[in-house]
Length: 534
Image (cartoon, rainbow, N blue to C red; front, side):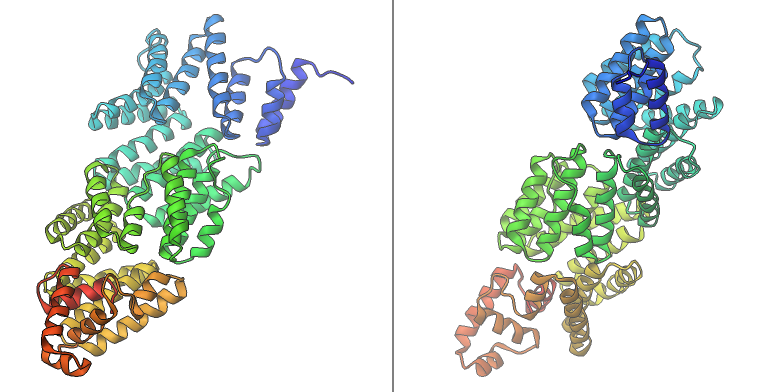
């Protein structure tokens, strides 16, 4: 058998790389002697795209030491910067900082305005962020993108822009942040970026859009990323996150079975532990919504084992299973530690429901106020609708059903437009509670009928059960009494209809108030509809 020479193998490896045949490229580079800086870079990128993270770092370290030994400070610094930047992005700030310091010693030998200064600034921005200096991190990324433009380096420019955009979004500067993300995507759409940077920018931009619930952009770029991934059969890295994002969009839009199909191939065996953890969480949440509570427990446990925080889904599962105090305890803890804007919005919305369920109206009000702040800051229709829905639930619980109507109508319009059928149905249940509390039973019945149909179509079994008579902690007799209370009947009327003594009805009403955490008949009616007990 003829043995390829190094030169021929290098050429074949380069051709495989250009054809995006990552496995073939990796194998050819792995078997080639005397790789130069360009070969080592492509070798490392092939490993990264195949999800071979350990190999990626090993190849970059090999490149660093080899280039340093050859006196090529530029290429040695480049390898060190990639190692440092990737480790910092993974949260390994100590190791990442050490490699960036190595790179900095080499970069300082170059002109202050050199191209590598831009990469160094971008890498150091992660360090500034870890120290809590968000403004400095934003400034460093802006300077790095300017250097990228100066040297006509699209990789540097787009990397810095997308990172600046994410930092701006984190700081509440939504319009500026989205503008940076859009500009970063111009180069991606034009095919101007290297393969690894393309994947990094795609994922970063989509994550940024989800952070502020800018789903129009998220859907647009997720579709584009799907096409990019599908064109590379060997691709492993980035594909998990792409599937998870598609599943999240489908969950929101009511295509729950399709969402589960997307998640089927994203497991703990994937290289991307974040994607695997998020996939387990989304699966658990879908199982919760469909009443498969044991499967939901397993999904949330798997997510936690992969380092993905299983809230607020786990707390909502506890509430659905009747452990309301455990759910509230989880929410108190989650509210105390959740800082990511997108996740915090989700937690605050769930906290409103859970705190109202345990009668903690003041805590629910705090969550609603913070949701209002985030809604005003992000100006996302979805965040606004979530705030309006939470506000209305609070107003109904506080015996102000008339005040709940306007925010509910506004939220409903958003959910219909998206469409987001589950949230639409939940909003209609609240509308029914408000209408009935104001004496408009016909309108309330109409909203409940529509909500029930939507829940059935979705397969939202727990919600259907609650609508047709799930007890929610009440005994069957208490549920009967509550239904009559909701019609406006007095205790004397109820006693006559159920052939009970007034004293027995008084006791039932007192127990209902205690279990629902309310003190008036109007509040009991509203709470019952809010929790979908009647």
